[in-house]
Length: 159
Length: 159
DNA sequence: GATATTTATTCAAGTTTCTGAATAAAACGG
DNA sequence: CCGTTTTATTCAGAAACTTGAATAAATATC
View (spheres, rainbow over the protein chains, first blue to last red):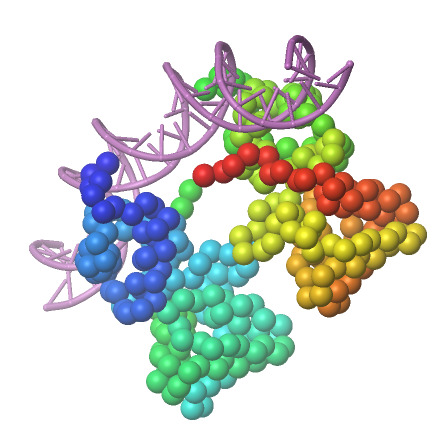
């Protein structure tokens, strides 16, 4: 192995990556490499590429978003086809979905790290997402819009 | 590796072990080795020893019981200190516990594989376990009693 | 307590996984 | 299109894991 000093094992490093990309927008794998280095974990870009793929991290617009894999649950890729419209009101976001898919949408939103969503409530065709403040709601709106527009390609194909 | 033919990988083999010890009482590691062989998986006793330890399988009385590890949840070792008494009534078992611990006890029981418990309901200091029939309830009673009597030692120390 | 049974551990392969460097492939911006 | 940036993949070496045989340790039985 390359760096043996102060190196973290794979699990630790990947957890750290999830935290880092949740805390601040990281736009490239090089950014992630640098952020890791700041935390004392030195790895090559190739490793970050593989980590992001394994973690199921996707790149939406200009930042990575963590959506932890949850076997048996819908992935973020369903959002474009399920979400019909969304509206922000203060610290809330009201999302109109295809009938019956609100539960799936809220499930996905609950699992996206980096979104400061306090909680969601799903009806039949509507999801209400509560955020901590107006800015956070704004951010959620932007991100969801980006996801639905920006052809979210998964970062890498695992196995 | 030894046997390359028809060998299952570790994960597959351990899942098989959980199933086997849930289906019928296996009293020794040699029994497990034999049972695995019947399924076409040939391993040494040393491997079974390690598998049982990793799986968190415990030996109570004369059979192995599977209690899948659930990080953050109580393990089976809490039963002796939490359970005050238990009574079988038909296909039900009423378990009296220390106040406030009924939830933990039912959580553990729900996770023990090999017990044919249909479901449990926990109050503050009482757990009601519903089994499929009287015989199953009898078995549950016996096993819990054994656990509480027979100084349940975990099978191996991991890490 | 001695013997037998059962389980855990040590040791030494063989195998798999992990990783960085280099490079290829893809996406992006004019 | 062409160059640039970004990401994915190939390759090879190193580390970690997996396993059986042998053996030690623990437990049970008498």
